[in-house]
Image (cartoon, rainbow, N blue to C red; front, top):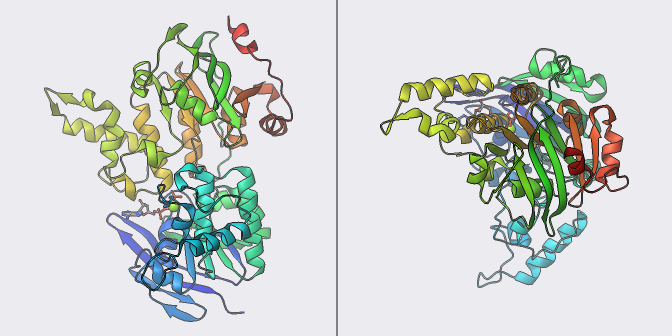
Length: 511
Ligand SMILES: Nc1ncnc2c1ncn2[C@@H]1O[C@H](COP(=O)(O)OP(=O)(O)OP(=O)(O)O)[C@@H](O)[C@H]1O
Ligand SMILES: [Mg+2]
């Protein structure tokens, strides 16, 4: 059988980097090919070329035996290639229907949009993919996960032959991931082909027929899924063996008795209730829970970025008043966002400008910036967090997704917080960089600071935390000590089946 898609000798250079270096591969009909590689390996760039969003410097793209040259992603779509990008691109202030049919709404002879038809068409698509929302809903009112699913539906609504998904599950809840996998399975049996980019290697074994690995822009190899183990894949990706992802070997950290931070009976009606917990110096406390269980809202509440109706927050045993995020920063509490695009980085500025942003004052003297020390500091940070960039002057928007995450971490660590609240710390980050981030979080705690980690990846929480709280529907349902950690128990608590938490017990224990 001839392949659906054939890619030959693709090359693409940006100033300072060869993002894709002579890559060739084939994709069969009805095949799911997982495209893997470290942050910055060139996965997104390669697939953007295949879907017409970028022009290659060299190489050929052949679809159904016919060579294609795309001037835009619209061209590629017409030729049967659809792509769902890593970044969300829906317009929040428009409805679901308007977003899915953007620039191709049904119109009458006068050019007016036929709204009824638009909504009916959208309704049909939503139904086909089991999404239970109205076509008239404004996109900004939907969860990030649902928006991500809509992006996928939008691409599918063009009936492409080849569908490229770039980290599609990074912000999906478990049920949404199951739904996506069902959709892919169905379409696969109808002959659709997929290129599936992910950093979650366990997904690969559920969904892919074959894997292909890139490193530093180059094609490293391709293997059928039943010929490889997880460890083989990781070794292919990083070019070395990663044995101790969570740094368990060197873990005998000292946690003080003293509480650095305490939250007592924090409530924001409708979002979360009666939240009480403490973080000791040197301690890493995890928050598990399903997406929508209120963890992020709680963090934003503690931080003064969200309304809080009642409750007390203490730092060093003293009640403090946090009304705005800058109050929190003054008390040395920092929150690293799960949505780095929206709340975190200055995308159009350089890596240097971003990492020094919270420290600006310490670099100026008599109102002048000390340029040399700024550059030195930025170079040090790039090294410390292994941010892959040709130089500190590169714009952050040009960094790969995982390297943007590392930049965000460097930036906020720069203000030398005592309590770090970090939401989905390794979303979109490759295995090698994950190990680096865990090491940095631990080193930070070891200096006598406190950390709160909110994560949907249970192995991550289990691997790095000293204690884990489990939230369900806005309440803490469980508290687990290290020796009690188990994925099953956490899942039971997160879904509300099981609970070991007696309200108020935590703060009594603390007194
Ligand atoms: N528009 C651009 N201008 C300059 N450099 C770029 C641009 N786009 C990508 N790069 C660089 O090309 C390389 C490959 O980036 P790419 O986004 O393809 O990586 P990736 O494999 O998708 O990584 P991740 O897993 O982090 O998303 C990186 O070094 C990146 O900084
Ligand atoms: Mg990418």
